[in-house]
Amino acid sequence: MVDVGGVFLAVLSAILNGTFGTLSKVKRVQEAQVPPPIFNFWMCVGILISSAPALAAGQEFTAWGLLSGAFFVISMASTLFAINLLGLSTASGVWCGIAVVVSFTFGVKGAGDVIHSPGLAAPGLVILVAGIAGIALNGQVAARRHETQETEKEVAEDADVENNAALLNSKSNESKGKRVTTSLAGLLTALVAGIFGGLVLAPMTYAHEEATGIPFVPSMALGVFITAPIVTVGLILAGQAPWNLFPKASALPGILAGCLWNGGNMCSILATQNPNVGLAIAYPIMQSGLCIAGLWGIILFRELRGREQVGYWISSVVLIVGATLLTLSK
Image (cartoon, helix red, strand yellow):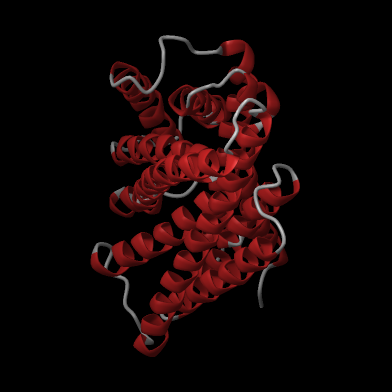
């Protein structure tokens, strides 16, 4: 019999994982133009703070947790770049789908999971990829609409131009090139986010039994603590952010976002380790977090409208169906 408490934890994980990204788009963060690497730093602080009780309890340490922490920092930095470039709805769909494929592949090739139903795995993978493609293409439609609106607004505000048609054409071509570049960069960062996000808990497979599950979280938090400053400084030196942590604008929302993600992570661990729930039931529920993220993107930030919303929801359902088939194939 399925345990109601375990299912509740899976649902809570989906809500938390679908919500943390919204805090990078709140008004105070956007107005201060906080760069993704800086917000990521504060998120990592939130991870450490929310893991403090477990750290103080002296849980079993494993060096594999350090690797998980490093994977998290890289994944989350890429996630925030993707949100900034693609929007919350599109970015969440792409990286969630990639993460499912990567975690499934690792489970089979790296952790020795056995596929009991290849007849479910093959179509599941195809359906999942179709869902990712649908979300990405839908995001391009939304980006094109935003681009057209901005171009027309700029031309309308230029009262001194005699030939607005020529100006509109010129600005349209310029915006198109910028949109293509932004979209490619956004998809690339979402791909990196999905790859490392799908591997965040992979090192736990190699940890000794006493350090798995919730006891694994403090070791992972220590990895975040070590890696976050290195990645942040590296991105600053690469010109992706200034030497400014924007504490007034980003400390509170960033720390809260980190706490939300860590809460979702703990809920997912507890749900999947519950013998009356397991991965087959919990994982598809947790992946519905991308629908939560899409809902926030539509309601709070007006990222998608009309047919774009329909396209997003259809693609999201397709993705979740694919993820479910993959999970049931094990």
